[in-house]
Image (cartoon, rainbow, N blue to C red):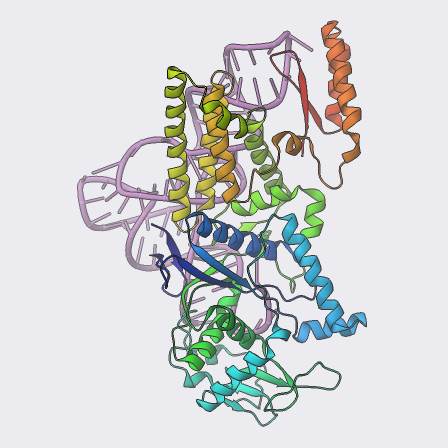
Length: 483
RNA sequence: GGCUGCGUAGCAAAACGGUUAUGCAGUGGCCUGCAAAGCCAUCUACGGCGGUUCGACUCCGCCCGCAGCCUCCA
């Protein structure tokens, strides 16, 4: 039974989809005025993993993640660069897709853009005005009247009176209440603008998500996700807008992922303490970054540090090392028919053992997507595999297939083990493989001649260059890169 | 000030009212020409103080410390 922590109720709840077997999930995506940083990567990877798991357990999932391609920052950045807005956003959307692919994130089913959703945005604002929940301020902007919506604050646990007491920001005099937020902004000179009943202008930030999500998934859908910082005011406002306009429940389950931190501080654009995905990809293999993200629970803080990334790399190496040299699927299927009686028993036992690991993995994921525990199951499985690798190749096959399958649910272990272990980062020397092969062979020759000193010096030299040579029991040698 | 959440061994990170988390690192052993990898064994824990309980890292209260939101932010 799958349980998910719901921010709305502050509890883990049994997940029951609105329509049996189907799930609609909307995640707040990027505002595209700069490259994605590791914090964005976390959202992408976390919800990608959630999506993969939903599909694995048999749900028919519609996954929508929007792109915010019009807002103050985009306008400002385009102006700074002297760049056309559409050109700027297109550039960063492409970059985002590149980062996503690198991190083995599968694309969402739909990726609506704010600028292509103006019609539904305008429609929703019109309804809100008609219902008396929104008004045109004396500066021409359209605002949402927060006090008119019963239940404002129910997601973030905030109380309007407390908020007003804490209000420190300049009060916009056009607002009836300082907490009211803008739905439609009047166009200023040289700003992109769309026609509307209230004149030329552009949408406020919050309304686009209400419009796009209900547009793609209906008035009422199952899951809405995003970073913790969107809880308030963004998601609170979305509820006010959507439920205000449709009169229906907006979302059943709200999921929020924790922040990536650096030195115990939130990684963010405004603090300037961020690493972009592409920077990090130069230092570490993509799968290592993915492993790092999944090694802590999605709601916990995740501290970014070189040490942590290095550890993630070592850990992932252990899993790939377990898979190295094990023949998988193809032979397994072919061999099934040729097993004799005692082999069949061995095979059946291996299947049972595999099923046990699968069940534990599922149990972990069913518990609010507990990926750290799911990973621990993979390590238990790897240990079991290492034990039987040489003595029971048939069992090893079965376990290896399971390991790759379960790893795949997390977007991991899909590479060829040998390739993964030999590959370096973008910055390491990728063209040197042939030279390494040759040196390893030279060392093997020296070994056979019992020239230990020469053999060792070759090995030491390779090690100094980040290449580890390993001798197999059968007299051959393999090698791998340290990272 | 209001509201969230967190505090686990050298580092990272989970679960659980009484039984091994897991990964890295350390120590001892097996294996190896020596290594590496692997296997086996093993040492480091539950912020502090009270309470509930036969029994609490796990539940409750208080205190201390940390992070986040309340303003654009994933």
